[in-house]
Each structure stands twice: as structure tokens, then as C-alpha cells.
Image (cartoon, rainbow, N blue to C red; front, side):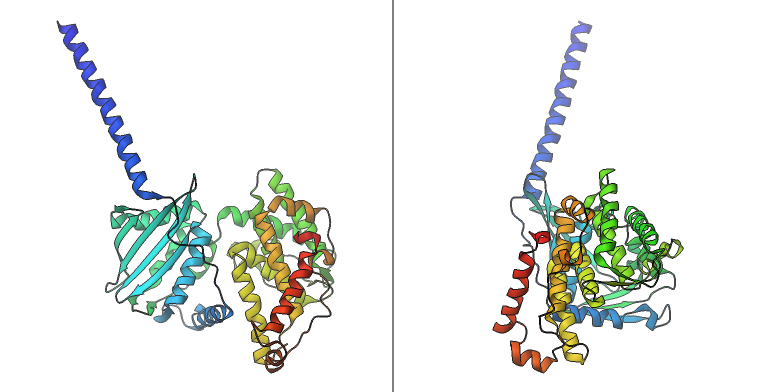
Length: 423
């Protein structure tokens, strides 16, 4: 009888465990069904204008930490558009998601769409409420699944860490003393500690990316050792750097990340800026010998090409296009070099190159490592109008978006389309 009783107890225990497991699986499936959706609620947006870039540059200049003593209370006013673009860029880069923000008096509504396997999406809704200090999470929802508001920051930190954002990066949140949320703008009061800026810069570049940058910095040092002060072409420097990228990729590296690191290293070098501005530890690395970097015998073409390539590889082509166009408009307005369609062509060539660097990274590595010349990177543009003051640019081409302007852009794109590099 005792054996029968023990056997019955075991059966009941087994049935209970199976029921618990089944219940857990059922609850998990139910939560997934509520959280995961078929379509993104936030569409991918790539609308960045030269005016947006001009505003961003003005904000950065006004809030340059070198312009005021450490610890001084400072203010930052961001319009809804400013904040939306800032969060959109950061979220896409660090979290691989698209976002959209909306301001209300005392509240900030944020939506985000994150792709997950099997063609599904996590659509996140977040509401921040203004307090006497920094805003607090009032509501958090993923799909149709409401979650405790306290989970918002840990989940955000976890996602960012997986994408390479270091814990030190969250130091920036400690600067903020108060945030006021209005219907059209957000006002931030903050203080910057003396050593926090360098720590923050280091945190924004993941350790593996720092290692990559060091490898390309060392290769560039070798390449320039015997040619200090001489002019070097973009093509002759790209080939050995992309050969190294191909080698590191073959050893298990991330091809797109290798290409980005190679481009970033060369761009800093061409602009005569130390990588230490981005990674403070780089001040202790080997330093390349200085030289003038040119593309088709012009330094300005090289800079336009490389800067646009880096921006496109890091942030997407609309931003690269907007930066290039903003630079030309600024030159035309300020009495600088004037609006130049050939510079704009170098911007567009660089943008396409940056696209390929991350969109088809191994093919580009093989193509560049095999050897290229300047003509493989930029078509003939010497016949394109340049040095146009704003009044002449508007009179002849109708300004940005004018019919004559669009015809010139079509000419540039046609020349780029005909190049084997971009086919």
C-alpha cells in the first residue's frame, strides 16, 4: 500500500511539474504575443537638412566645455526638432532602433521600433514626467504589454552595453541638475566636472573599436615614416589600410567595423587632428608623420570625400549629404570659398564610398586592397562650377532645389553611376 501511495504521489508531483512548465510556456508565449508585433510603429526617417546641421553646430559651439570654468552652471535649450534628431541619431547608432519624440507641457512621449528575428518588431512606448530635478519614467509599454516603469533604465543600459556603449558613458547623466519640458522645447541645466569630458569620450568608443583604431594608426605610422611632409593621395593610403582591414576580417573581425576604423583613422590624419580627440588613450600611441592628403591633386577634395565617407559609414547617408550641402551653403554665404559643385561631387562620392564600407564591406575591402587610383574614387569634376558667391549661386541655379541646381546634381550622380567602384 505504501508503494502504491508513493507512486501516486510521484505521479501527482510529475503532473504538477508538467502543469507548471506548461503554464510558464503559455505565459511566455502570451507575453511575447503581446510584446512582439508584425510592423514597426516608427517608420525609418532620414530627413536631415542643412538647417538642422547648422543648428547642431551652433548648439555644440555654445556648449563647448572649454568656454566656461568647470563646475559652472550652464543651460541648454533644445527644440523638439533638435531633441528628436539627437535621440534618433543616438538610438540608431547605439541601440539599432528608430525613434520619434513628442513634447507636451511637463511630459515627453517617446516611441521606438526595434527589429527582432523572424521579421517582427518590438514597439516601445515611453512617457517621461517632469520633476523638480531630472524626469522620471511614468509609463513603459512594449507592444500591447505594459511593464513596470522601473525597468526602463536597466533595459536601456543593457541594450546600449550590447552595442558597445561603456558604463562610463552614463556619467553624462550626472551633469544634469534639472530638466524643464515645455510644449515646444526642453531646457536643461547642467554642470560639467573637470575630468568627466575625457572619461566620457573614452566611454563612447568601445574597447574593441579602440583596439581597431590603434591597429590602423600603427599601420598609418609605418606608411608615413619615410614621406614626412610630402603630399599623399587618398588612394595610396586607402589601399594598405584596407588590406589590413581584409586581413583582420579574415581572422574573424567585423568587416564593417574594420572599414569604419580605417576610414576614421585616415580622416583624422587628413584633417591634421590627433585620434586622442576621440580616444584620449591615443595620445600615447604611435603618431603618423604629418603630410598633406589629396584627391585628384586637391586637399579640399580629399577632406570632403573622407568626412562624408565617415559620416555615411557611421550615421547613414542623409546626414552625410546634409553636412556636405551645409558646408557649401556656409561657404557661399560667409564670403568663404563659395558654393562649389565639384566639392559637392566629392561629398557624394565619399558618401557612396561610406555606404559601401558598411553595406558591402568585404567586397570593398577586396576592391581597394587590389589597388586603386584617385580616378577610381572621384570622377573628373574640374569642369563643374565652383567658388560661387550666394547671390550668383541663386541667380544661376535657383538655389538649393532650383531646376538648374537639380540638373547639376543629376550630372554629378550620372558620373558617379558610371564608375565601376559604385556599380
